[in-house]
Image 1: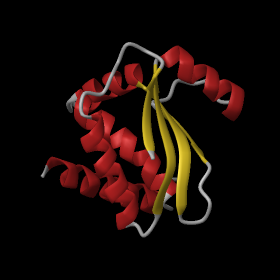
Image 2: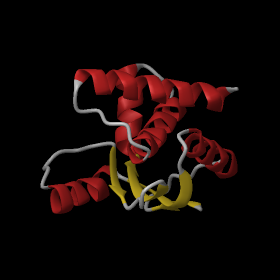
Image 3: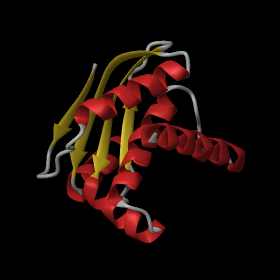
Length: 137
């Protein structure tokens, strides 16, 4: 089950279609959907989590807590809509495209993709692009 929670005035208008897209992405990678919670918040909220749980005193667009059990995907994905908006401007893409990229990025980590090395980052970006393409058709 995928749930969308809001700690800010922001709200997704197409929750059901995004839920189906996320589920399909998980299943495409031979995993099973467990409990996934998206929490949309602002910079202040996410910064506090970043400091408290990761000891990083920086702003970020996403923090994910992976509670998966083998192939059963579970976790909490916190997304700063403020950071997503700023990044969309910086990368010259729409807010919606950047939001979807960040949303699926967390899921791709859960199904096994990493992004520490240059090779891993390239594969992660490739997987994000594939998922975004599927969402667009």
